[in-house]
Amino acid sequence: MNQKYPKKEKLKKKSEIDLLFAKGKWHSCGNLRIISMNLEQKPQENFELKNQKVGVSVSKKYFKKAVDRNRIKRLLRESYRLNKSIFIPKFGTQSISMLFWVSKEIPRHYSEVEQEFVKLCESKK
Image 1 (cartoon, rainbow, N blue to C red):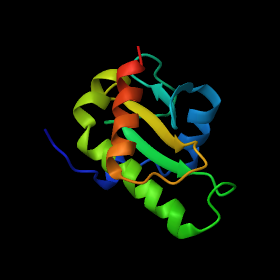
Image 2 (cartoon, helix red, strand yellow):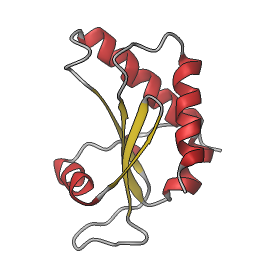
Image 3 (cartoon, rainbow, N blue to C red):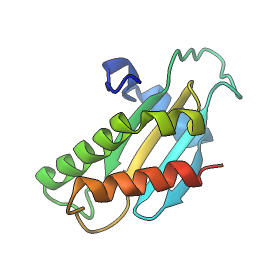
C-alpha cells in the first residue's frame, strides 16, 4: 500500500473546502471529528476529483501557540498517511475530507492520535 501523502492528496483549494462545509457529513469519535463528502456518489458540476483529498485543522482558540497546533496537525497527517488502508474503503477513493482535533489537551503520544483515527474510521458506516 502506498504510504505517501503527496501534494495531490492535500485539501487546499478554497472552492473544495467551501463545497465540503456546504454539503459534507460530520462524524465524531473521541477527540477527532471529520467532515467528509464522497464525490463518487454525488458528482458535482464543474468538479473533477481523481483521488481522495484530506486536510487537517486545529483550533486556534484552544491552542494559542503555533508550535502546538503544528505538532497536532503533523500527528493527524501521519495517522492518515499510515492508515490509508482503513480510511479509503470507509470514506471512498474520490472523496474530500477534513480532520479536526477537538480536545483542549495536546496528545501526549502519536499512538493516542492513531487510536482515535482508527476508531473514527471503524465507527463510520
